[in-house]
Amino acid sequence: MIIVQGWIRLAPGGAEKLRATIAELMTATRQEAGCISYTLSADLVEPDLIHIAEIWDGKDALKAHSAAPHAASFGAAMRDAGVEGMNVKGYNAEFWRQILGGD
Image (cartoon, rainbow, N blue to C red; front, side, top):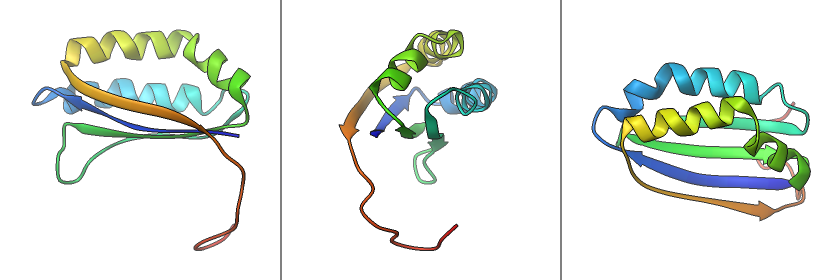
């Protein structure tokens, strides 16, 4: 299992410009083989800070996602929204235990 965690800081108003594109990206990505969870969200305190949280069943699924047309479209839209910084990392992971709630 691969966990991707990170953030993207956009120019003022950039997150709002990307709202529809992010929704389309999330919808398409969640249908991909190997996608367990995929969420991009605006920070409640800093609205132009986008948090990234992804879980993939393996490296091949993440690699396929990176090559998907909707991922490329999002990359182009991000450039237009004014990326001021980003930090996204991938981690090998395994399930440890349920911490809160349940299915």
